[in-house]
Length: 304
Image (cartoon, rainbow, N blue to C red):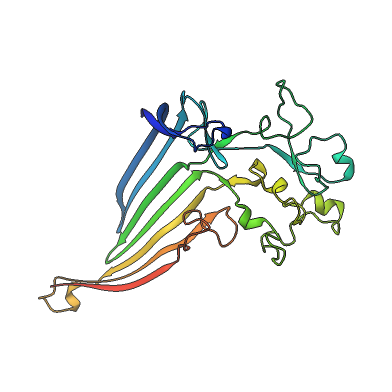
């Protein structure tokens, strides 16, 4: 599938104008995508089964917009994906004071244990020995989910039936929010359990610091480590067992004939989700919404 749309955008104007960015009906967005739906139904002896599977993907690329629209850590600009992440490339953490010597720094207060950013370019089109938002931020990949899929699987055997519903996303560039990992947000706050034991520290061995996942703990100038960069991005793909249901149709010989059907069933929703999100965070509900909970239902259906 191919589709081209006109877009209403709040395009960037110079800040000295003193006005908010005006909305303009301008620009093009080109979307291409595809979808697959497969199904199969059969019996093996007394066991019947049915499988329905779907997989789809789309990608939206911005055409000529007549300008640039910034959306926090995301951007719309010609050639970018729709709401693409925009920030710095990184190369691990500074390990020693020697690493800082001659390195391109984002701040004069950078110390060992801070994120090391890549000097991409400068005013003359080549690396200039410093990290600046004007020349060193780059496109980091689209923010929308890719390769969404689902499956509905059903089995039946004599009076029993079993249904399983699966859904998921194959790929999504997700930013680890600073609220998840940033320590000492206020002077009286501690560090999150996610960071505990996984950060750079002067009390670690050199090997432990080489393997550290997170920067040093600091309350001063925290923005240097937690600006938008690929350091904080991960693949937010997930597979969720959305529902499992088990039913039993009571043989009619066991009850009076004026009843047409008695069915007993049990159902479990949102039982399991396999993902790379930090423990306690859900790929669908995010950080600021009520988490998705597992629900167990038992019931009976009687038809007269």
